[in-house]
Length: 550
Image (cartoon, rainbow, N blue to C red; front, side):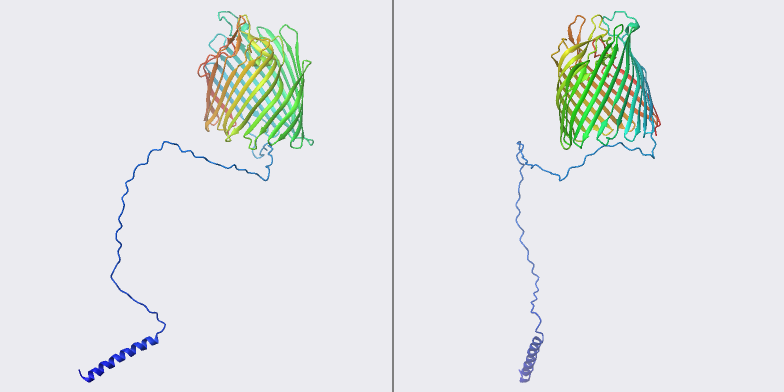
């Protein structure tokens, strides 16, 4: 190699080294980096999977017992809610008072015909007036098994001032019964001998203050008058009743009060071809009251004069309730009278003969019980009572042919009673109520049995508005037979009775409804009173005309 080429290569290398050093010496802030370029990709080895074979668990027949411990929640309110006092709804002056009128007519296999009606009037602010009437004629399959009814009532209420009100009622009621229960049935009687009619003309007048006076006084005196007559085969007995009642109540603050009442019950009875019988009863009833949100206690006595015979009756009762009003406990020791009158006796047994004596039934009763509600719709109540009764009126068949009932008395009768009720109500659409009563008659003085008194009763009532224009109803009642006396004077027990009634009502036009009523659906020929068999199954239907319907 020539010396010139060697010098040329050496110069070139020197120039390159010098250029590199100059470049590094000029950029001292640049970071050193390393760039690696490769086509290698790492791959993990596929893991080995384990396979599990599932087995069904064994069937466990033991029910687990789980215990819950729920602590009691104590809620204390720092305040007490105020009391609510209901007041009368004020009538809107822009909407006039709408009077209601209806006429109900019908016919059936027993009732020929049936008529019922009601009419109302008044302005709805200071006066209210109602007229009610009912009339029917019923006839069964047995000879002379029939009865008739004609009744009319006029009721009215008038506001005399802002805080006073006057109410009244006058009415007439006529009834006819036939004594078809004679035995043997081969006996022959004329129609006048079997026809028994009752007529009543009565009136009730009351006056009360709608708001307490400035001294916390409430009063509502009332007067009841009635003229009653019973007639059989031209033998007529009459009776006049006069009842005056004056209740007063004085309040002291919100929790205390005092009641004072006076009652005069006067009866003048004139049997056929006999002297006048007077039966007068006077009572005074003072009592102290304690009323709180959870308690109501009344403590008092009732001095009474039964035809000048003095008796002191208790008048003590108490109620204790929970804060939500769902449960109320009751207890009481009370006394009261059932007035002895021909009118009241005929209302119990229409086949009785003229009573030869009038005695007032005096009752002293001790009871305990409870009542309340569940779930805002269910209501319930139960009561157990022991009562000692004096001069108890009983009815026995006469010992000739048994078609009439004689009134006899038991000087002392002790009764152990249990009564319960259960109900359900859902507004105005559905309601149901049932009751049961058991009576155990013990220590019957003067008589061998409690003639005509029922030892056991059940009842039920259903009202259901299925649709806007369709309503149904049903009623049921049953009883265990009462004791009765045979012609020979032997004591017998009557048979049980059961009665189911059902009906419906539906609208076919704006002011016209159709209705149907079926009574004694199971056609049970029971006897509430010995020798008097009921009608059996009967059906009745008709039309209701409504007026002033919008």
